[in-house]
Length: 187
Length: 185
Image (cartoon, one colour):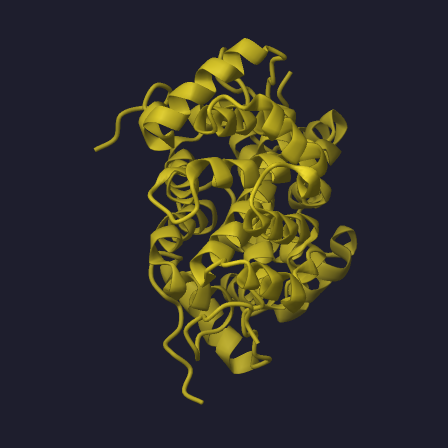
């Protein structure tokens, strides 16, 4: 049971978002820009970064829904998503994404863990300044989202089919669009 | 030196906001709603929560700028801000704020650190569901802002007058507009 009275029937962050639409709006806009808007990193790559950080933070809801969105963006390759969570250095992803995941893992521990060497390695593998910036901010933002979801004790059902179905819709329509289902219409 | 080519002369998060205005917009709006929007918690109380979490995360720019905003809200009481950072249980803040700071400190360590007991104590001291929600989200959001500011290696000058002026601006105008002009070197 959640620590505060959240609207029923909305799992994970959706219950918290519906409880407080004024903060839900910028939260959805931020994640839309970082993970869904056009970017030189693919949606699949960005969702893998979000999933990896959420897994390191041990947030069941976030790692499962973002893992499902990542899989939906990567030809339903759920095995790849699992491999990235547990051992990305040996996963079938680009060296550039591995270098960005190293940076994301440092940010998950704390901002000060990121080293000039980590950044130089990512740059040598072709990462641009915007890609490095977005990697740092995706990792930092999921240190927020994960704490928000777990810190309120939200309901996080163990229902893989629910996450898989939702993941496909978010991958297709984006975060702001699907949030309209549970947020009041604003001017 | 910053890890990426951030605009020069802008301290801390303001350089990252200038580098990527698309993400700056919702990040400013989130801070504005949480710290400056209508709330039953005062601006000073909310800035103290943000300052405490930033101090626990050891982010110099965030704890100094939000500490200055807190002091600006609290009759320039910089000593109180320092005491809340070091030992809030012994500081002269309300028992309700102490209970909320306990929750914020647990969120800083990890969302799963929050306990039903710490929430119950806050409720007994009069905290509402909305106040508990906002405390959790302020603490979580500063785990983002702090990592963003330090993770990019932003320039964080040690300049008390600059932070004091930023704090006054934030306490008065909130977060939707830049709190600082380009610093002339």
